[in-house]
Length: 151
Image 1: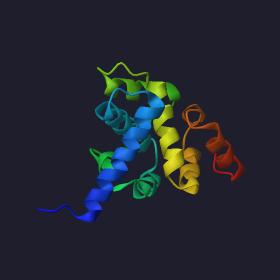
Image 2: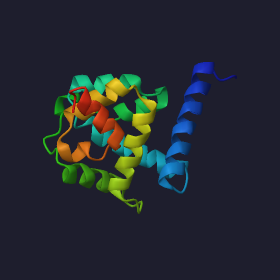
Image 3: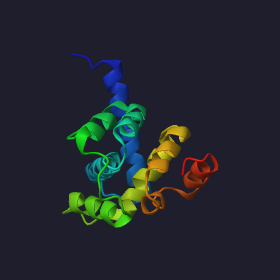
Image 4: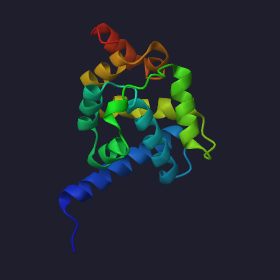
């Protein structure tokens, strides 16, 4: 049985994303990078309004989109705990037992998203976040969003 081209492409895209995370974040392997991606995407998704979460999800590659929506409860978003500390505590709790610093994980995934997703969409996402979480995004993207009145 052959694999449909859309599935092959989705797998290739996911491998590129995971390799990028391994290269930039120094993760031990793609499984660890996948854990980081999943956790940070979930924490981010849960701090956005449902409409913005859907807009961001639509921009993700097929497999990343499935991971992003895994376990999502639209009616529970955005999360009430929106500080940087709460965000990073959520990341750290979900990454256990991996010895990965939550702030590094968030910065690595946000950097990947800033490179891979439409800048306008990322500016919209940043615009919905409190100042502490905005600070985890690459400075250039924060500046770009602010110039467009979205941050």
